[in-house]
Image (cartoon, rainbow, N blue to C red; front, side):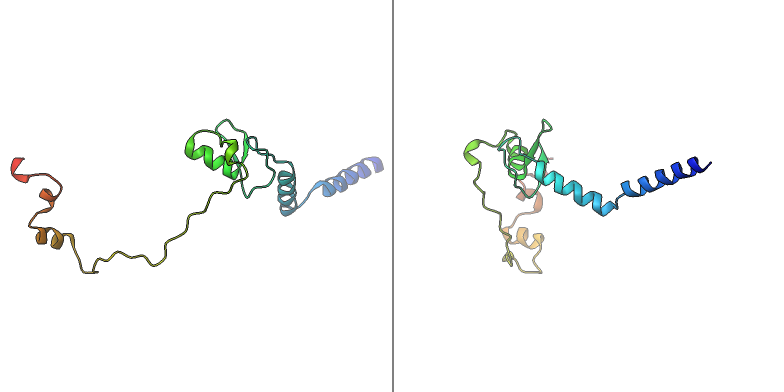
Length: 124
């Protein structure tokens, strides 16, 4: 009976040693993933985000986005080149008064909405 007790205690101790917190497991996975990832297209190891190509290969963010938009792998001529980022427009508002309506626009032109679109209501 003493042997059974020690076996179960040894098993419990071993299982406690094996269990890691969720945070530890996630951080270990991220560290391993960052070290081992290589882009299938350009062979880079450094990127902000890893993606999968249509064929399921691991690719860096620029190669993945290029393939998504152009439906072809990113060409070697673009490797290492960073494309400019889009800039957000700030404070650009149209020069239309707040109380302006489409009815005013059409009435000032002498046309109704149907005529403006090229449809003649009398012909229907």
